[in-house]
Figure: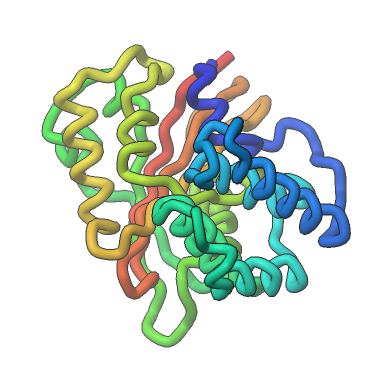
Length: 258
């Protein structure tokens, strides 16, 4: 099962239950209230809005219906451009807001991203063997020039389609430090060792090193899991996206199975 820290990071990305529907008339006031609370001296960041506080506020737009609608997106764009709003907000907190806004560009169709299985095993790419390599599947591919970018619609569609799943929902931005913490967590085959974690980190961020575009989502399935045989299983995806947003390296990690 996922640890408490992993559950906190993924936040509600694995939609085991259908979220309560809402709209901008409720999500925008909720976001504003969260930011106001984050500016209080008694908040975790004191009077400064830190990344975890921004994440909690921004994620309200996704938790309600798994998408950022046009009104919500316009509101976030205004916050990004508002110099007054940005006062007292850390750079990493603003990056979470900006990255979420970019990823959720409002398009309702997906770009033709072709994900292929790599010719070697995860152990070959990570340069080590252990529980993480045997709990991991890797695929990568590109979007043809001029045919779109790796946005929310594209990543969620391809994560489902490429692995024969149905329950993968929205991706969320993460930092390299957050990725490292996820890779260290226990997986279905045990606790990863430091060599494979270091190798996985280097291999994944090889794609996103210049773009700083790393995303994650949770996954789960019942009865029959695409490529994983019968039974219930789940875990998380990591998507590393290139600077041009046309190349994606996607990693699926299985953390539990019943």
